[in-house]
Length: 254
Image (cartoon, rainbow, N blue to C red):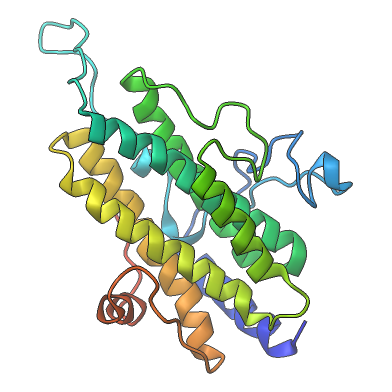
């Protein structure tokens, strides 16, 4: 691996530590039976989260609304539309795709930026799972191992992304490009999901997930630019991507 890649990723991690006091071991990002290079099927060690990049927290991303009314009785959640249900189901697996790709790329390149952002993506997955549980929606992830998806389109996309980011024939910058592409897609999709709902709990989670994705895009895009490359937008408008990458990281809760 090129020396400049290692140096720039190390600098990025130093910045992450400086802006984020949360740097302690957390919940495991991988399950013990995860497939892939670091899972049992791959013969590697099971990894645990080293913490959370970009200053996110489970508290920020969890559904915080009280489920009891003024009289202390449980409040029945509103009924979701078919679009809202479809969006949550898709988003749950889309966040899994991000986590699984980053864990795979961490195994290939050994750069902590991928494992740390994978920890954030696990929190994103958990936040969406909270909403699925709240509204009684079946979880599309279930017991699926790493790299396995119920959605056929996401399965194909996962296979394509790991091929692009891990190929020995490609330049190592491709892994960062893959990361930027995933975050570009997440922001684009969540923007449309926000248009499909007026539910305050969904909006809160969507906005915080999108903020996290913008921060991830800044991390990947910033490293690419520091190495003399630039990310070409695949989903959002290029102007929007450039503004995100060129702006400071976001902190706090919406």
